[in-house]
Image (cartoon, rainbow, N blue to C red; front, side, top):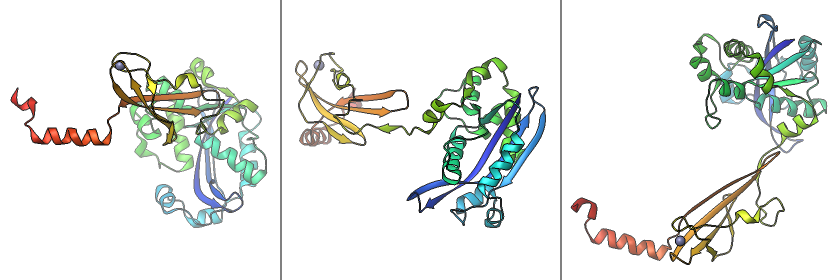
Length: 301
Ligand SMILES: [Zn+2]
């Protein structure tokens, strides 16, 4: 059993055939660890750019990769054949920091090789997700590689960051510090068809109010003062991918602006709603007029 820690560098470039932007891989780096976490071998290759012949200034600055490097590199298909051979036939788990690299690699395989899977990927761990759980960092925070390394007492400045092999080395050293076989098992995903459907699914807000995915029973507003069910007194309007309407609490004679957003994920619909007191524009003007005509009562107290 080997652990393959992989990192990619890519260049976001316009693709005529796709009529849109795509992340073209320009470098692959990897470290192979044995089951007792010893470095067995390392891998590094520049990929010859076929879509974006020129690197973004930001990529050049970040990575120190030159236009020369990517024009003399190995074409994607050949580089991947080489990498596959290096990965070998032994059972393995591939680990990356965050799952973006895997999504980018699937996109490149689809574009350059015409297949929608990664031939050498059978087990996968999103190491960022694992590390956050191991280090008790909330999911909302999304810690970067360098910050996580620092927290674990590593010195990220000793590695050339944003280069594929050095990032892999740093990730491998970090992995050794937080290794727990049992916990890792629970974060290991078998790369079957549902893995690919899930990882390539793009979450999107539901903007059609008649969509069957919308749970209409959630489009109700309760008064935040008395808890009564409010009556909708305006049409639903779509703003910022959310539905919005004005509600009235008959008991409190209060108007409430209620906003709700439905977002579709691979296996769930995420619902977020909020309500704020609704003040009409002419009422706001009146309040401002009253406030500016009198002294603040807080000052007098
Ligand atoms: Zn009320």
